[in-house]
Length: 271
Image 1 (cartoon, rainbow, N blue to C red):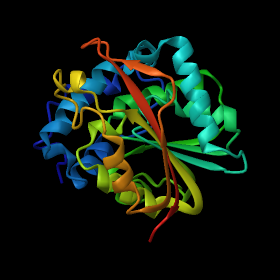
Image 2: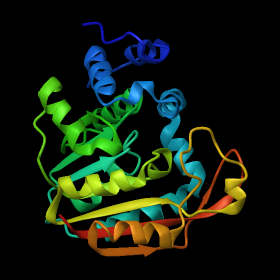
Image 3: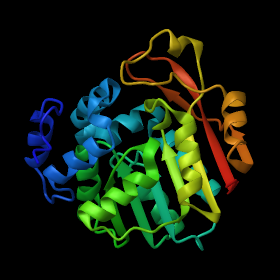
């Protein structure tokens, strides 16, 4: 079967094969997974794929530009505190990108295994490069997948890429990714299926800002989140929901609008 038919302009994936130190995901299998998940027919996904393929090379630099070097370091520290005990062994990062947050958080917590899930293969390529270049001795895997279909994404990577992936994870992390995905409820519900009963999820994203909303980006599904609405949604799926706003500002490089970020901690999934 030809899995490349009806896929977005494939120069994205051709470019992905060039300049690659190691190839964590076979091109044909990546296409097959993305098509099976139904992503390749969605316009928002196509825009995000193009956008994040282009910026993967300098993703860390871009994120540092949002917060400043000191602000980014502080945010990583705040996330690490929320994730908590080093007794927790596995982290799944949803929308991990190049591991901008996942890698330093994993180092701080001394976890045994990290798993980076993303829908942009180029991002995962750079995650793998960083793991290799920095000689990070943590068992890890790159997972091609959809945040709205977490369990199904894991299943497809087990089946088609023969990855050995846990059924449940001690920790689930997501930073600055929720606002790129249309159905927030699907993500939160999906986390309940892959999080250990005593596990913890930490979500970081931007607080809704009227100024930012007036300068919306075509790659965004949401221009930030209203915290009470998010809390109400999360309590449908978790017994413990805590949302706080640290003293860290995020400045969008295009609109130059400065906004707050929130940290949401979720525990005790309701099943």
